[in-house]
Amino acid sequence: MNYKDISAEEMLRLQQEQPDALVLDVRTPMEVSQGRIPSAQVIDLMDRQFMQKVEALDKTKPYVVYCRSGNRSAQACNYMAGRGFDTLYNLNGGIGGWPYEIE
Image (tube, rainbow, N blue to C red; front, side, top):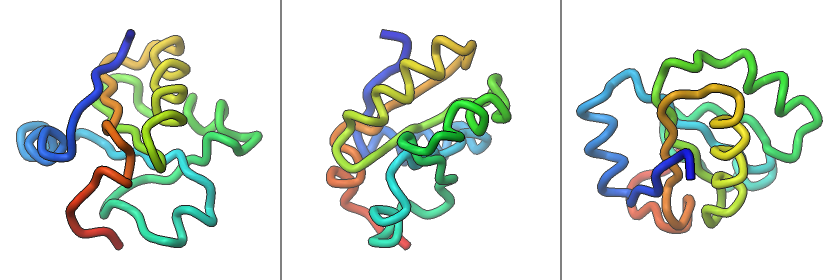
């Protein structure tokens, strides 16, 4: 595994310790319309442009990736790791495991 599963609490701590960490939401637009983690960048894993959009990201920054339950974000982490991204975290349980504020 080329990424680490982390809890919501670990994600908050990571954001405080590494302010350059980016949050990536890989859910569909319909799912995102129901709420997302503040400051998350949205790149739908099911979008035909997903690969091109990911390639445009800074591979040296840390990323916390999430979806609804953690499965698609794990797929995204595996894909990103295979493209040379250095530091990847998968939010365990996805947004369903996020007990904090959403926007």
